[in-house]
Length: 85
Image (tube, rainbow, N blue to C red; front, side, top):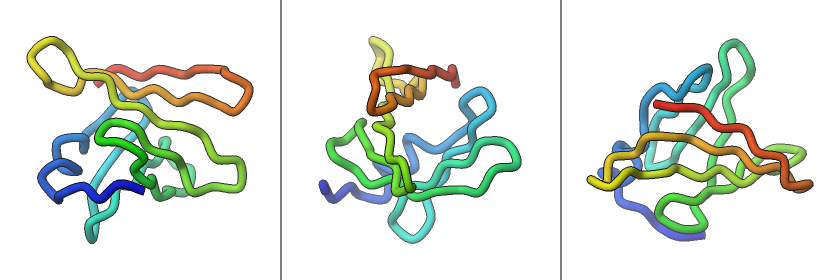
């Protein structure tokens, strides 16, 4: 895992379609609507892995100006789900 500063985590926090992402205690969490939230472990500044029974890769995509615009989930079989900010 990569260590990210609190400001880097806060930059990723926000609403992405049905998902809510927030930083708490130096860690990033994500929750879809009424489902249970789960922890994200950073692999790179914009790439995380979920700490769940079936982990998925979670990527934050940034636009030309550096602002994060999308959240992408990638399952182990390569299926992708994207949500705009």
